[in-house]
Length: 252
Ligand code: DGL
Image (cartoon, rainbow, N blue to C red; front, side, top):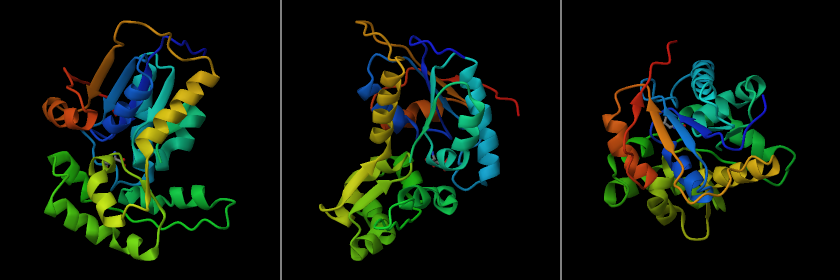
């Protein structure tokens, strides 16, 4: 399939979290149109098997592809870890993932990618599932998230970890407490920003960047369950209001 630079960028996630990736994309690429699909009927992906997550991911990708996307961003760490090879092999457009949920950590995807060919790199991973509901509740500062972050991450601080990858869409919202626990000398890698940069590079390299325009590009939102909660909580993740989201049936 020949991609057209005027086509939108397709983004999917299991639900709301991928909006942190969309936010970074909108900031980095302000002229691009986007289509976002949150599979809110089947969230969470993080606790499901790789096989099921791959099946859902292929269905999500098909939905976006039918709407003419020029590139797919898998804005879900679990789906990226489980389904990226299957998506890249099947889709006629370029596919990029994000860099955990229990499923992401269990898959060992980050450890393999980071340690491959680099004998001096040692990777420790820890799933932090309670960060997800905290971020969705907007409970990102104060004693409760700080205690949870200490419970999960104090070991990293003791082990002298120097770089921490925020391996889930929801974790950037808790950057403040995470930094407080691990200390200022630890670099935090926000996979949303890293992904937006990779998308910009890829579109540029293939001549697919949208032409600059003085009008605001269109951003459309689709969900697989009723949209109310997505619209309300999502605005916190996106950092701007979500005017509306359309409920769609993916028909498994
Ligand atoms: N979006 C998911 C991820 O980044 C977190 C929520 C879920 O488990 O579905 O892995």
